[in-house]
Each structure stands twice: as structure tokens, then as C-alpha cells.
Image (cartoon, rainbow, N blue to C red; front, side, top):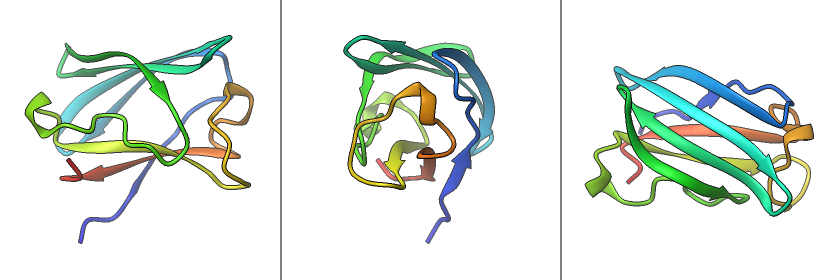
Length: 101
């Protein structure tokens, strides 16, 4: 079984995070909107997913055909609410699991 990897985030409304995952250069553009937290996902510089709504305990990639080597999900460590930027990396933690899709 592959271990979960925590992706470090900042508690800011808009951020770009670059992180190596499964040997790939992954970029996450995370944006807080009035309707929720959204994410764009890049794999080795190629946009794989755009405007994905981030929800508690819900996989972000979901489909293996997209070519992403695993999947990510936000987890509310204090309840069951969807993520908001103000609690990122504290209340809401973003996890990566290789081969999850």
C-alpha cells in the first residue's frame, strides 16, 4: 500500500504550489471564489484539469485516462465541511495517493 503524502499549502485565497509527485513536476493553482475553492492541475507543464471544485473527502482527478499518476483529496480534520482557504494546511489538509485512480 502506498502512503498518503501531505501537500503543503498556505492559508491564502489564491496560490500556486509546485510539488514533485510520483516523479512528475506537478503544479496546483488554487483559487477561492464565492462558490468554493477551485483547483487547476498541471502535470509536467501540461494542463490536466481546470476549475475543479474542491470538496471534502472527494477525489480531484477521479479518472485514470487523464494520465495523472494518482489522486488528491482535501480532508476536513475538524468536521465534514468543504475546504475554505482560511483553514488550508490546518483544518483542511490536501493529501496525494499514488495510483489512486
